[in-house]
Length: 259
Image (tube, rainbow, N blue to C red):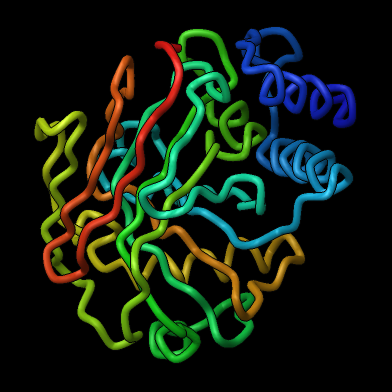
């Protein structure tokens, strides 16, 4: 039987110490998806016990190509906590991370609760505002290698996020050009259409998946809707920025030596 508490403590320590650990699968055997989400919840419980607050959720595997590559038929999700928030234009300490990468996203802020099976119209009606965003992902596993159960248990690799200026809820996000720069050089280009063909569909999926776990998305929460391009390694970079067309710009700087 999988020892949920022990694995969660191991992952929590890896994140706090910025120290890579071996994959769970292979050591503990294959993880069922339900077990992986139980571990994820237990990892987040450690953070909440230290004083962090739950502030939203993030979506993963929202690219059709990535789902095919991973042999998946559905998205995955993780939880966002207050200690993951980085202010727009803020500074992050590289020492927090093991082998960080960054990806451009669209974020929404909710004004009404969402849970379970909902329509696109219901999802849209619950949006208070939306914004361009960047997510820093940082697998706690050695060499950034993992199976599906591993990454779900590891909070879908989510580590920090930066949200730009909030815009009216009716701002068009269907096909927004995304240009991500690292130290002034373009590293990834794409479109918000890569997020399930329509980012609002990702919010529908977030309500369904979180609801299945007994979690209701709350007013005021941020939902990160998924990467619009492949993630780029931060390496020894000093600055990351995203130009998201009419959604505006968002970025952050990095202090400290290379991870």
